[in-house]
Image: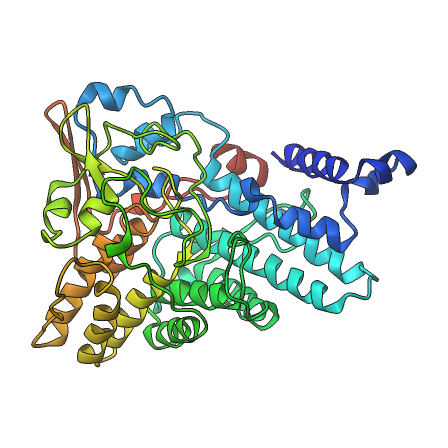
Length: 458
């Protein structure tokens, strides 16, 4: 894996600047980018820097089901097939696990850029600061995504005792990796993102939504802090992000019959990101995954005048049952980036959790007003518990297939919701209990062998 990453960077830089490569004398340092232009090209590599992992967590979640045993058996990606039933031996010897490799590749690129910026002598200070903020954002996002799949949920009391994931803070790929505590992971993530937000420009996203700006860094801080149960801080960052950029799509203006009603770089996207798997048999990329069926209770929770029901879903031509149609990618491939609708939901949830449930529902109403046909009736709750229940229901309906359901189940169970996941195949029932160690996926075996990392309990 390490040799592969070095080779990829070398080939990328050669392709970016063939003249410089051919004119220079051969030497090992050729694989190291040096210029601000090189750094920009590395960060602009969408197929590396804008993949979030999240495939295994999305496959393991409960927003969908497969219709029968034969459909499940036809899944040729072994880790996806096993993740569907939360199997202990998830990989069965498979070596290249994209949910692990892709974030660490992003971290490697970010470290190379951060170290390169320290040595860079170009006088464009503004661009250098922007690239530093971008690289820090990328490293923080990648490390956070790793903790959400390969470590148990964050707990404010026991975080120092929960084993997290390795933190690679230098570009030396020969350095032995060690697993840090989850508390140290969070500290590093927040440190990277805090510095990133101070360096990234305050610019409204346009056609370059693969690039993060200050509103995206604030949005990611809100997501991270929400996952850790730090609601006051999450509220602050969600509010700041929305103050910079709060655009919402009016679903009344979208085509309900179109297969791609929402375009890729739409007005809500703050930072565009996809799951790592580009050809998942469960979630199609440029085709309809006709055997991936929507959980019936989820589908039925959409009211008749809720436009999300027709915007997000269609009917399977194979089974005649509801299936995913696609949202913020312009395809059926899920969107796992950052968007304003999530920030409204984070703000509303945090307002409710810290005691102001009336204001929280008012925030939620601002989002739902753009999602319903006809006259919208504001939500009503008589207490905090009822308001939080409404919020959770709307969050699930709004963020379906956004790479967040697994994170939500983990943190809801930490708060005592006791959500039990169940699957049925060929008459056999598979169950994932609320406190199961299988909420952390196993570390790939090659990493265990090379670095001597302790394995997650399964």
